[in-house]
Amino acid sequence: MANQDDSFIREVNEELRSDQMKAIWTRFGGVIIAVAALIILGTIGKVGYDYWQDASSSESGDAFLVALDLAKENKSDEALAALTKLEQDGYGSYPVLARLRAATLEAEKGETDAAIAAFTDIGKDSRIPAALRDAARLRAAYLLIDAGTYEQVSAEVEQLAVPQNAMRHSAREALGLAAYKAGDYAKAKSWFQQIAEDTESPRGIANRAQMLLDVIGASGKA
Image 1 (spheres, rainbow, N blue to C red):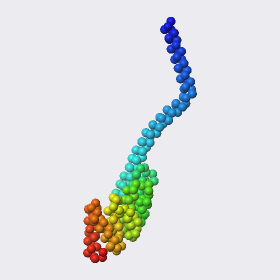
Image 2 (image 1 turned 90 degrees about the vertical axis):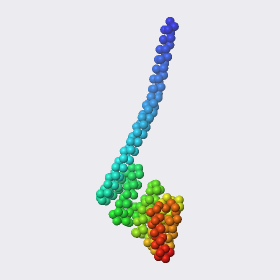
Image 3 (image 1 turned 120 degrees about the vertical axis):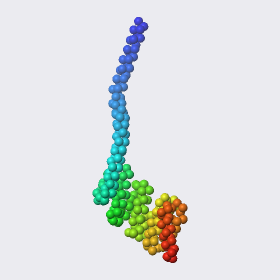
Image 4 (image 1 turned 60 degrees about the horizontal axis):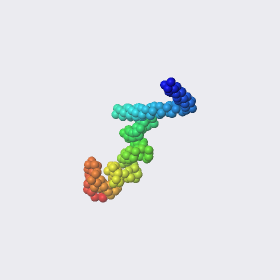
């Protein structure tokens, strides 16, 4: 009899638990499903986004390599078209790299003014990493040595010619060459001396600076 009582009590408890679960599911089932769906969708979204990132980066990288190959084959117009498209539709760092390469191509084609304008725009674009902006300013400055004035070169790179800047050596060389071309030998000498006295100046830049210092000294003009 006791066993039958125990069995009956278990059946009653199980029935109660079943009724409770039904009530809970009726009340909260929709919420539970929604939460589960959000978790699944979140997981799918994360995996999908990671895949999209990898695919987009890979696609942009392939497009950049195609543009570089076109440039190597002297198909400048086609290369510029491909780079322009990459600037607009590319992913990650590739739009910036495309802008830099396109500006270089314009310089190689002899479109100096367009190249200078492009490099100057990159140098002023605060969205671009500082190192790339500085590199663009230097490129514009070297083009301006022949195509512009000392003041234009100075506007591009004098801010880089300070002791703490890693690109100071090239900036000083550009300033020295621009001053030399302008006939301001005293200013040119000052910039070249800064290069010669900087123990961290790269050998090639230091050698060129010393050669021009010797030329200026021999001329007696500064």
